[in-house]
Length: 610
Image 1 (tube, rainbow, N blue to C red):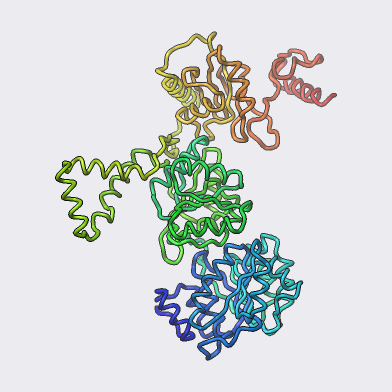
Image 2: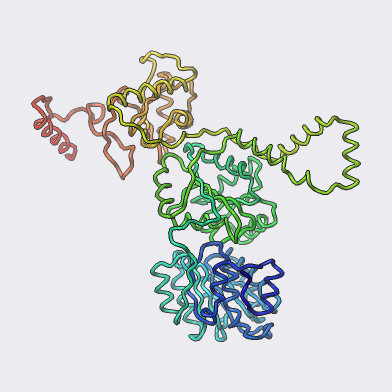
């Protein structure tokens, strides 16, 4: 469907940019019943909202004219939540309204305020800015809103989430009441509806979202990984897809710094985006992504909000998002404007249930799999080399002369080998990574005793196999330790071994049997290394895994007493080693279940005494 008739100047701009067919939201705002009315629009991220409201406000700004008059007081104001989004909107409106002679000015935090003031004093038609900077210009009398005809709130839900409600109300109250108000938001929670009800008049509702339907242009994949191999998984995912543009999301600035440095060290052309960077640094990073000098962007959620990068075909969740809305916003950086994209969630076993909840609440279809292996990546590299455009490009006489000179000196096989080495030298090496195993299939019911014996027998063999050949050791030469993960966490010796080695500063030679229970895992450490191992794990315990000496050999799992909701807390008292000896009043008794309960109650009450 072609674009509906708009202003001739805007039609020329769209044609020059290759815009032939409108997206659903663009077509909706150009319908006759939306003409010259306030609009309340909810649309999917990456659906072309900037061009949509640029077209929607044209009739109010230009009328029947093809060009603007001499710039004076601004006629339109666009408010965006972040600097990057505001600057991006500024660029879009410059090309869209360029043939109409529009002068567009940006006012965002982190930029030279004096330059902005001069631009406003010289006159303009459209102002694009962030709430804080716009309010500052208003309070200082630099921004004249008396002739304002249109106000646009872009990503309104995000602006309220970031705490800009007071600034938005101040700005809207400073604009003429007869203005048009266009409110665009990915979601419409109650606070957005309340804001619209207060500042809009008879708003036309546009909803291009389909409930419970995933973004058709994004393929969601969740990869099972070991907790100590998240960085390796990022490397292999980037190498497997080799997208022209990729974005990796982290929770914190520190995580962004660390991962960015790690990728640079491995040979990736990567940039970082976080709140600690200056505006100039952020602008340079984004420009390097747009012009192809960098292919990977490591960013926090706030820094990457609203960014639209060309050829961004891959989004990786290094840290799982906190909620499903963040999942959709992150993932929406790819699959934009009709392009296909891939969203990859890296899911350590400790985050499996959280990932499943996020996917369920977001209503997206996800494919679970293991991480790409080094062999799979090398196979893809071979296929990509075979299909490289270098083989189909037009050959010049100079190229032929060089080729003949090479063939005169070298054999065809030598030249092919040199090409392969040259191609491989440009690519970072993939990492050897462990697949934590396929998803558990429904099992046939077995006798409880039979299941327990089968598990213990199987995991004992696995533990010995992973201990350099499964040699037997005397129990007197080993010390038992316990780890706060078990079958409920999909524990498997293949990825437990690297974690034990990393946290305890030992090698596989010092590890004996590994026995996995429902809530915990017990394993042996060579007695001579046990003190050093115990000291190391006390210093390196992280929030997901706790390792401590076991008070007994492998046996039935004991119940644990939760502390602050975490599963690895100290066991309840089971003897002198756990509680410093039985309380003086407790006596050994074998009078039956009722008396046993009474004795246990006394033991618990004694713990509360000072």
